[in-house]
Length: 304
Length: 273
Image (spheres, each protein chain N blue to C red):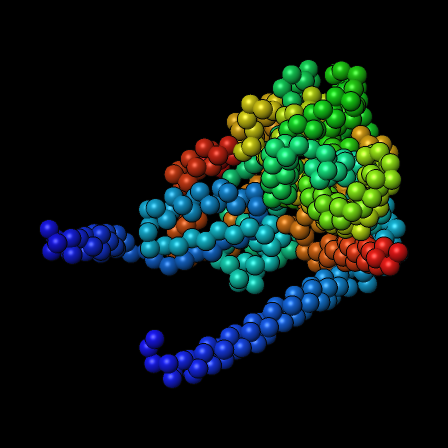
């Protein structure tokens, strides 16, 4: 026992130090949180400000409802900046991807959470998590080499809405699966036990008890997937065709907003560049709307 | 043993010093040259700059992109020494000193195996303008034509529009169902995979994955582009504000020399010599 008399002072020192670390880390975290909000605001203000020249020149209605996008026309025709085709493209490709990804993703989540044998789950789960980390350009390349030729055999040029939807569905599936699975797993055991004890079959238990209890998490997974789908540019540039015409069928090419920006930024200047920023504003509003709806839905879900 | 290890680190240092001294010997040229502009010229200019810097290690040649319009503005306001352009200057643009670096043919490509091997310039214009929509109208199978083009603003697209779509007047816009790709490589990839597609790429990108069509009966080769019989050829320029002097002149002279033009030919472009 060395110098018992000094022990309290040493202890005091270390407590002080801990207190200081505690306080300062709280400060650091606060700064981090503030910085992310400030960055978000700065981005919003920046893209809005850069988009104003184009919106002023084109007019909001002509911009949103115009069906012709031709920033550098040949000859003496004036340029046109209408993005309705791109808005429709974004909505169609996102909805299409969700139609495929929701049933598959939730089904796979149920399998992983409740049905699959332990060993199977041990392989499948890391595999799904790994899928989240694959860069989108890789999905695009695989789509270009595998999916596009398949779609081409059905008809059309191959690079199409259908190819975009399939690739996008594959991209958002892992997000839907992993978050849905977590929320299904989080449903208390007694719910299942109670349902089974009352004589419900496993299907009834899953469909009527577990899934409704996990619905807010499942909805969250869908919203996150939707966010990724709306914003995906790289993979879409490669597989969706990027034609400026309104698609008439799933086999026609389309031109969603995010890849529409990515395709042309390299050469754009002046009003053209500003118009691309204006597409960015529309995209931003899309995401904000989706997230707001999600928040409202979650709150209602939590209250019920 | 220990002592020798202690001094071993000096060996590379000494070698480096000797190397630097040797490199300095007999080189009177030093300084920097900056180039910016056309993205078609960019890869060619980068190779030329590498060769030049290997010969003159004290010279730093920086190559940037940005597009022809950027090249014209930057050289005019003095941001760069040399601008590059993949088209002729328009009448409303500042009149700069042009140095013809090379010529570049634009090839109309299809997938190998497509029975069509030649078109007239008017047919090309009708296909890309959406007037001819089926291969059977130009001697091919009864199947819709899938048109593949570059994105708006691309130098290759602009040159193609000026030489094919805008002549003769009035200009015809490219059909809006055309698939768009943002690189020569992308167009080549899509056309190479689709038996019914047609696209256009710079001569420098042609390989055996695609078939270049003859236009008005003239094959798409560098020889025919040089002789002027192949109809879709555009100039590639270096631009300077005034007659170049000093290092700028040295670099441009190197690019126009036999040695520089050999690089041009190696890359599949058309030499000027």
